[in-house]
Length: 512
Ligand SMILES: *[C@@H]1O[C@H](CO)[C@@H](O)[C@H](O)[C@H]1NC(C)=O
Ligand SMILES: *[C@@H]1O[C@H](CO)[C@@H](O)[C@H](O)[C@H]1NC(C)=O
Ligand SMILES: *[C@@H]1O[C@H](CO)[C@@H](O)[C@H](O)[C@H]1NC(C)=O
Ligand SMILES: *[C@@H]1O[C@H](CO)[C@@H](O)[C@H](O)[C@H]1NC(C)=O
Image 1 (cartoon, protein in one colour):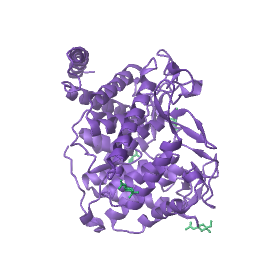
Image 2 (cartoon, rainbow, N blue to C red; image 1 turned 60 degrees about the vertical axis):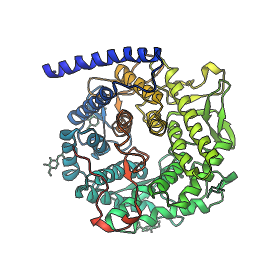
Image 3 (cartoon, rainbow, N blue to C red; image 1 turned 120 degrees about the horizontal axis):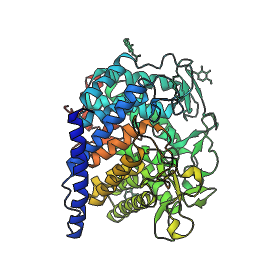
Image 4 (spheres, rainbow, N blue to C red; image 1 turned 90 degrees about the horizontal axis):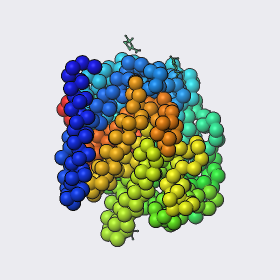
């Protein structure tokens, strides 16, 4: 650490210290909610975290997918294994770009231009992860910069995915082998996950729009038509569906992003990105979310709202950390009910109630970070806490701060920024390691071990959402950009921009 960095660190510690005082003062005088003097230094703090996390990855795991931030070596056990797909690079680009981290961004762009390839990978990779993270990340960069490298590389990825859609029932397979050009299911189930196959809409549509190649769009449109047409048990969508037969798997339903929740997210966001013209997507969202509210949402004895899971139509009063994205989703989806102000208000309120429950899962842990999964089925004081030891981990997941960001943008209620800042402080205290950031094995044990993993989603989502939470609404305004399921923003499509092919210019240029 040189003298300048040291000085910056001291200043930062000071501002953070002073800030807590200001907070107490303003609360005392009833001013909180209107004043957030320190919002710039909070945003800078998040930017510093990104810079640090990127540095750890770039120096110790470059080209690999993720970093083991305790050992300072590549982490090979998640999504794309030890293949050189550069997941953390591609996932990070838009975050680096909006933060104005120019050097880091250029380093990543160069790798995408010179080194990114799937050609020699003779292994089965997740269609969902390739679409939402790799294609999504590249498409997002194209939208922001208009740089041709990104259009070339994202169309290349989309082409590699096509064998997954070779199914007579229009239900995609879960994995593809890029070298063998073959598809396969996940190793643990013959069915495809509903959320995984139904959230591919925006990336394929946008690829058609910017390349002028219309063929990508119908491929995913058929998936939606098929799901819309199928008989559904009690009008609800189960989490699993077989690609060859289009028969539903076990009668299990959830709001998780890879289960039903992913379908509703895909449809709502398709509607929003279509400039609210895609009526089929809106109808599907409205009907489905109505059923979710009727059958899966409940109130615990302690007064907390949850969205549970259904197993054979029996409600399990439990939420996953990843299901917490539903708070933001349902709040955002209140717009779909624009013709009925009562329903619109009801959905916004439900989004807020779910955000509160998810925040409780953080507040009720000793580290201030929430567990992987938490229940609402016993005594009130145990609401929103994890019981089994394997549910107590925290994996640097973005879903709760994503919901804070959406609600902040929709309501400008100061508490969402305050809750987000609590997360920043807890991350600094418990998750910062020598080489970056890592998850925790037990959120209830402040002295417990970390898990060593700096998941790529931390860079693409968690830190991006936190940065935006402390930025002006004009940075990626929700009326002009829609975040895909992996946090990569894609631009809303305006009517006069229909299929003009590759000469179509991106909508917004940021300058860094
Ligand atoms: C992942 O694989 C790389 C290269 O094979 C190796 O250097 C690294 O130590 C592995 N990571 C872990 C955590 O074992
Ligand atoms: C990336 O590609 C360039 C040019 O082909 C090559 O010189 C370099 O070694 C590659 N870097 C990595 C990390 O593979
Ligand atoms: C599609 O699947 C069929 C049957 O599984 C196979 O024979 C055919 O070669 C596949 N086509 C492509 C383009 O992968
Ligand atoms: C609002 O629109 C939906 C879908 O188009 C329709 O089913 C519903 O009846 C409308 N509600 C009102 C109050 O007009």
